[in-house]
Length: 505
Image 1 (cartoon, rainbow, N blue to C red):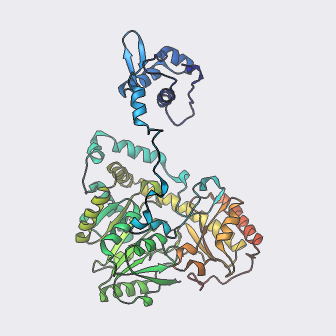
Image 2 (cartoon, helix red, strand yellow):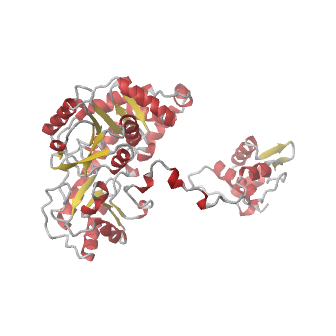
Image 3 (cartoon, rainbow, N blue to C red):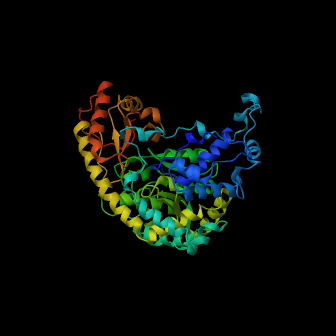
C-alpha cells in the first residue's frame, strides 16, 4: 500500500482517529487495500503520520469492531476477507440500466403539484455573497455554541438517557413542554395546560398539521395579502374557497372578512410588512370568529425580536372561547436547522393533531427536545434573546439610516423591530430585475411579488433582512443596491410616499 501518500490534518474539525478511519476505508473502497492484505503496523503508521501510537491503535480497533479489519495475534491487522464483498454488495450495480424517463406519466398520477406553486427563492450559496439581505437566517457568530454544547453533553448523560433513547410514540418531552409553558408562553400572555401544547418540527409543521386536519374543500380560508406564501400554497391545495384580505398600516383589514371559516394572521408582526394589528382590530377579529363560528390561526413568528415597540401580547391572550390556534417557533432565536416549534390549542384538538403527527413522524427527535429544554431551563435562551435584541437593534438603526440616505421614502421603519425592512419602490420598478442586477455586485435581496396573491401587479416591492449580515456591511450594501437601481434607470433618491404598506394596484 502506498500509505506514504496518506496524511492527517490537525486543523480539521474531524479528530485524528476519524481521519485515520476515513483514510483506510477510502483505500479499501478504491482497491488500494485488497481483502486479506496487511495494513501498516500501528508503530509504522504512527511514525509516518506523526501521531501517537495509541491514536492509531484506537482507530484500528474501531475498524476491527466494524468488520473492516481483523486482528491476528503476533502478526498485526489485516483487511477483512469479506470487506470488498460487503462493499460491492452495498453499492448500486453499475450495470443496472436506469429506468426510462418517460415510462411513467407522473403528472397524471399526482393528486396535486406543489412544485408548480410560487415560492420564496434564495441563492443556496448566499453565504458566499458579502451583502446577504435575506430573511430567516441566523448569524452563527451570535449563537452561544459553548452553552449549547454543554446542554447537549447533559442530555447525553445517564440521568437523561431515556429522554432520547425511548420511543415516546406520540408524546413530547414533558420537560420541554413545561419550559414552553413557563418561559415562552407567559412572555406572550398565553396561559395553557400541558395537554394544550404540541411540539412540532418548526412552525411550518404545526401549520401543515392544522391545515390538513381542519380545512375541507368547501372551507372558506382567509389569508393576508401580502402574506406568507407557504401558508397560501398550503391552503390552496386543500380548499376551493381561498380568500385574500388586504393589509394596511393597522394590519389585517378585518372589515373585509365575510362569513365564517378560518383566518390565518400574523398580528404582532405582520409578514412581510412588519405592521402590528391594532387592538381595535384584534377585538373585531375575535368578534368575527365568535359571531361566525370561525377559527383564527395566529403565527407569532419573531415574537422575541420586539426590541423597539411596546410589549405586545399575543392575540391568543385575548381569546376567551378557544378560537385562536397559536403557533410559535424557536427558529428565529436559536437556529433554523433545529426545526423546533410548537402550537397551543384546546385539548380535544391537540389530541387529534398529536394523532395526525404520529402518522407523519411520530414525534420530533427526543434528543433535540431535551437539549432545547435544558437550554431554556438554564436561562441560556433568555441570555441569547437579550444578545440578539441588542445586536438587531444596532443593525436596525444602521439599516434605517442607510435606507433613509439612499432610498428616501421607500420604506417605513418597523415599530416592532424584527429582522427585516419592507420596501416599496416606484411603480415602474421590477424588483426581480433589481435582484438580478444587485447580485452581480454581491448584494442579495428578496423580490416581494411572491408575497402577493397577484404577483404581477406588485413587482415593485422587496424585502431586506438584516439578521445574517454584519452591521459594518449594511451601509455599503445598501449603497451598492442603490447603484444597481441607478443602473436600471431608477432614481432611488426620488423621494416617495411610503405610507401604503400593501398592494400598489
